[in-house]
Structures are given as C-alpha cells and as structure tokens.
Image (cartoon, rainbow, N blue to C red; front, side, top):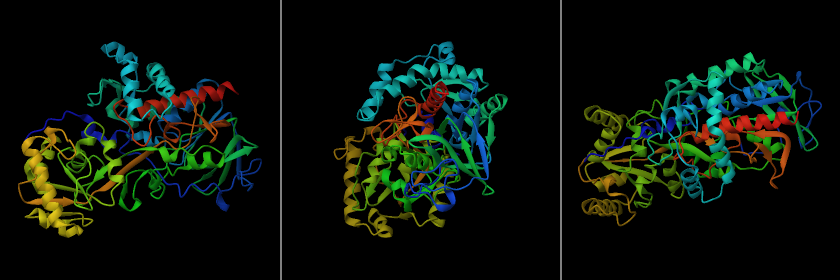
Length: 525
C-alpha cells in the first residue's frame, strides 16, 4: 500500500520549534528562594530575603534570555534609545531559537512579491476552534496585523530569509511560513540580530543566569543573576523582560501538562530551566503553566535516535497507519489524529496508564516509504534494533499473541483487537474510532512488532500570564509594573496543544511580543 504525504513538518516536525532547542527545569515552582539565590541589596523578594551583590549595574531595560523573543526585544528597545543589558544563561545567544526554521507572517514583503495572502477569517476560525475559544482572540489579531511589518523590520536589521514562503505542508490554507536562510534561525536570525544589538550598544552578559526579581513594593525594578563563577549581579532597571525559554527540562513540572517524567527523553539545553516563570511567580505573576502547550512527539529508544527527526523513528511516531494500544490491549483513539498536527497526537495518551505501538512488516514499510527510508535499509535498521533492544522497548513475535508477553498484556485481548482492526482495513471503515481509510493498513503479515514509546520533549510553550502588551499579570489579571514575559515564557496563543495549522506562529509571536513589550516598556521610561 502506498501513502503519499507531502508534508515538510513530518520530515522536520520535531524541529519546528527547535531541534536544538534549549529548554530546562523548574522544580515545583516554589516561590521561596534558596538561601544562596536570594535577591540583593536595594531589592528584596516577597519573602524578604536580602543579600549583598558582588556587582550592581543600572540600565533602562534588562532582557533575560537571547532567543527569538529576547533578541527582538533587545534590538527594539535599543533602537528606541533605551540602555539595554541582556542576560543569557548560556555561553552564547540563541536559546530555543537556534533550531527554529521560520516564522509566521501576513502581508510581508516576501508574500507581496510572490502574490501570497490569506485572510484573517480563515486563521481565526481555525485557531479559536482548536483552543475551544479559550484564548484571547485579540492576540491572534495583533499577530496577524503586525507580522508583515515585523518581517520587514527584521530584514532592515540584517535578518536573512531563504525567500521561500509556504504553508509548511499543512494544507490548512495559511501560507505563513517564512523560512530563514538555510532553514535555520541559528543562521539567518540570531547572528545578525546579535550584531545589530552590539552595534546599538547593548551589553551582553553571557553565562549569567537571571534568578530573582528586585522589588520595590509591588513594582519590579530589576533582577539578580548569578554568573558561571558564582558572582552575584544585580541589574537595576525600569523594565524587566523575561524571555528565558520555558520549563521543559523540569520533568516533574511536566506532570501538570500530562506527561510521565519517567517516560521523557528531553532534547534541549540545561540553561532554560524555567527561570523566567520562577521570577514571575516570585513577583506575583499568574501561573499559566497548567495551560502550557508543548513541542513533543513519541520515539522508540531501541531505534536510532541521534536527533529528534531521525527516520524512521520520528516517522513512526507521526504516521497514521500505526496501531496504538493501551495497557488493556485496546485501541483508544484514531491513530491519524496527529497527521495534520503531530503535537495533537500527544494528549490522547495522557489518559492511558501505558501506551504501545503495534505494527507488522507492511505497516513498517509504509512508514519507510512515507519518509524516504530505503526499504532494505529500513529492514536492517529494524532487525538491528530488535537485536540490541536499547531500553528493552521493542520486541518481535511470529504471532500477535506472542507480542503480549514482553509487556504482560492479555494475549487473547490483543489478538481480538488486531483482528477487529484488520476487518476495518478490509472494509475501509474504522467502526471503532473512524480513522480515515487511507491510513487503514492491516497488521496481518508477520513477523509482528510491539514497541513501548517514550516522549521526545523539545520545549514548553507558555508559562506566566501576560496581557496584550506582554506585561506579566497577577491572578486578578492586573499588570505588574515593570515586568514583561515574552516568547514561550509568556505565549498565550494556545491551550495545551501547539496548533501548527498557522505555521511559524510561535516564533512569529515571539518576535511580535518581544517588540511589543519593548515598545511598551520604553514608552514608560
């Protein structure tokens, strides 16, 4: 059986928000700081802890993080005449943005040149329906209205695009993906934006991690940070912009959005440890992390996994022809739920105690064909993977019943479930879960395989609550003076699932909110 899926985000899917993304950990979100991380003189946390800094600096705007949103905020604020200090926990700029392929826009110079346009009605109808109307639609309106000018602004500041603009293969009618040079913001975006910031006199402090807000009553008037050498730095500022990259590496924190931390392969950087959320919570910001979306997909440890898009491993996670069963040897959802958006395939398994792939040679060959893996090479990969079986998660058997033993499943129940599934394939009608007929590939040709996948986790999207200006807000939705959260530290376009029907919207929003926050902050200087 042949399935032709021309979908670039299947081939590059997990890298859509950064295959080399830097994400990190937030242990429990406690608002009380550790003794060795207390804020410094002239400022104090809500708990009242004080300490003396080794270095004190003053500026107008301090930006914590130098990824897509952080750099947009840095350059925008500096252009408006602000004295800017940029704090970066890593030894270099880029953060989550290094692996970003492109960004969303409407009405950009590139789209105008190529006669590309899409209407707001199509965008907002899809996005609001996907989030059950739980998002503030004005955020999408702002992104749609501002994004074309944002691309023009980036180009004027030296950012390089490939010239390609497409719908990322979604077929959803939103032709918004502006590809960076070489398909990487690490090439086309980060270097020129850093160069522009340096030209404008921005002071970059690398290997310096922002840790606590400096408070004057309810107002944020700076941050304290720690260098790699353990030196405490206090940066006094009229505005603090958090752009630290989310909380994806805190595996315990991921429980609140549905994931089992014992079943996670985190593919990110240790620097993005949820510090922005921690700072925001300490300053009294609303905790939006329970609603955070993510960029993640399943992977099989036994198969080659040098990177998040390694084939056929990544393809098996996203191919609708796979069969998913739970601890009761029962299918629990239509397996093509992630065909349009691979992130959408994650929530169904949050409700299952265990989750497995079942497939045969025909299904496996279909996956190989979809993702450009030579069949003979694919067979060798599978045979070698079964033999070595890293993680004890991939097994082969001559019968369906035989697949049940390695994981203690009910063999008879599994055999019946697969027999029922094969009958759906014969009729072309999945009467159990209504999977579309093109994805109904029978599991009838031995040998048979079962795998227990883990979750390859790239990043979280959304952490602290914000308003349209990018200002952090309290639980009562009142803005916190002097504090902003942008990028994935403040993205509120989604609820639990990153909707990639509008390709590049996360990074496009990061640019837009970075600029918006900087403009608002500078208007108050």
